[in-house]
Length: 218
Image (cartoon, rainbow, N blue to C red; front, side, top):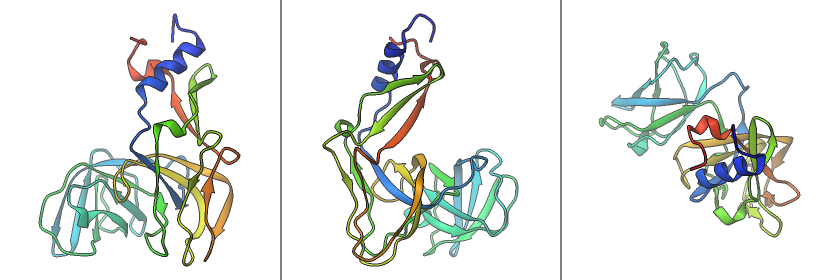
């Protein structure tokens, strides 16, 4: 940003980006960069069939596996095979029937480990992270966990599948997916494995440029 040093720009983003109250989860599917998460403007169910309307064209196809999170009706959240696809709508069968209109959701082709075999997301604290650093002229990064901190998942009581990446969510279950990343090497998690991230296996958030946030450091 004009008039600010790299260190000052990093400090602006560090102050504006709140990393408290977030959770890290493990993903078995991380789509290509061309697959974009989309916000859902509403959903309504007839019996157990849910129709999702997205704010913009979603680019999905019949038969895709799509994860819904953050809907105000919990029964509509989860990972589903979709059908009835149009440019801005699709349908799926939810686990239980509901007739309420839901808002506030997000649709994504990222697939998280199912919440079975002791899998659970790990809560993150703002103090777990290193301070943001200006890594290039156009973006700032934030890494975690810092030295002395470990993000340890429960010990698996069965297979969690092959882990391809991670997701940062705003809730312990459901919620919205805020960030994703791909592991440098995929890892199969089986019974008695205890996955973790530590300072030698960090995740990196690319926060962008302060100018993209519409601010000037005030």
